[in-house]
Amino acid sequence: MAHKDNGYLSAKESRRISRENKKVTDKLEKQYRRKNVPEDEFLTKLDNPDNALEVRDLHTYFFTDMGVVKSVDGISFDVPIGKTVGIVGESGCGKSVTSLSIMQLLQRPQGQIVSGEIRLNTGDKVYDIAKINAQTVQKLRGRYMSMIFQEPMTSLNPVFRIGDQVDEVLQLHFPGVPLDQIKARTIELLNMAGIANAEGVYRMFPHELSGGMRQRVMIAIALACSPRLIIADEPTTALDVTIQAQILDLLRNLKDKINSSIMLITHDLGVIAEMADYVVVMYSGRIVEQGTAEEIFAHPAHPYTIGLMASKPVVGKKIDKLYSIPGKVPNPVNMPDYCYFRDRCEMKLDRCNGEYPCEINISPTHKVSCYRFYDKKEGE
Ligand SMILES: Nc1ncnc2c1ncn2[C@@H]1O[C@H](COP(=O)(O)OP(=O)(O)O)[C@@H](O)[C@H]1O
Ligand SMILES: [Mg+2]
Image 1 (cartoon, rainbow, N blue to C red):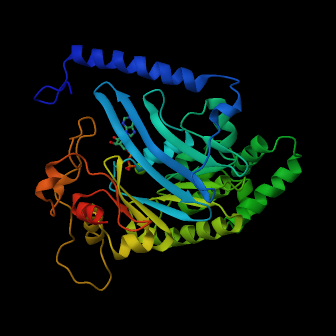
Image 2: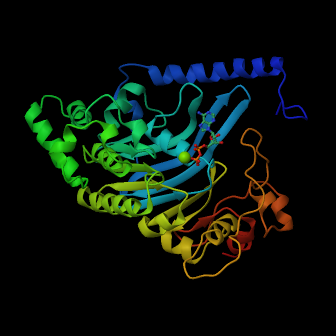
Image 3: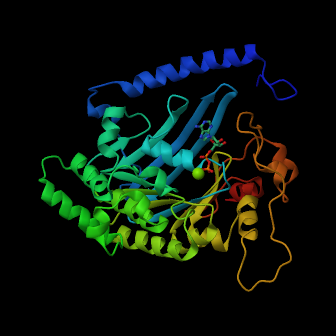
């Protein structure tokens, strides 16, 4: 890359980068803003009809004046219908960018899906969200996929009453339904989300509610249209522990009631252990390991996953100091061409100096990108 030794860019260099960025993002923006495109262009097929979501070789970049940040750099995973997939990894590894890509809620024009596929199963059709335009995705968001964010206060509008905000979502997706029916459905949703005094809360403003109550309202909004896919990005991180457990229970019960799938993003392995059927481990914009929850917890294979497990406190185990993985995440503008984890890895081998390791199946469902498993592949 064009970085000088000291890591700073000259003004001239920075201008050149932003000119180049603009060329790329203008083209992608034009694609996204197109109007009245026949829907066929966005329709695609699934590898497996039992999946609610299939992500294939997704690349999402941010075109900044410092250079191109490859936040998500070629990830592939499935979310089966009716299952919960947990996505874990340290802060900054690309979890939120993955979820925002799926929802097409990236910060535009800098943030762009540059290649890959995101196949969303709506029941009778499958859409490729990666290539879709703004007009079409608007009809899918909320109806077939919805997202619960970490901080519910920033997602609720402070100047509108709770009831009106839920009504609005329903009215958008079910135009023509009379207001009294919409209102009844809102109250029902608030009840379902475990809000005892739903009639009262209907007339309240967001600031009158506690954090846990606000998150329940967000869940009610997210589930308003019984979406097939619910993306929960650190949904309980801002809440205290007892409320956390209640919210997770609620999510799990509602998911089973409407038979949707959950993509649960968290840095908390305890939450994953409790909720997830499948686990995806991300590191620096890539997936380093994925498998069933049982495989990942009983037989973690990637040194990074093993490190994550070791840095989790366990009740009843006496230790002087919690383990922490040495070193830090590499700079996403200037990624190395070898394994991104190599410089922090305590199990590295000579062959780890080679190119980035490819994904190896160590069971039909368990995959890992690590040279330590190359012999297994060759031996098969
Ligand atoms: N709007 C943005 N502009 C530039 N870089 C971004 C932006 N949003 C996220 N990134 C970068 O993308 C990477 C992944 O971020 P994110 O997905 O938010 O991580 P996390 O796994 O903690 O959710 C980080 O290196 C972050 O700095
Ligand atoms: Mg995040």
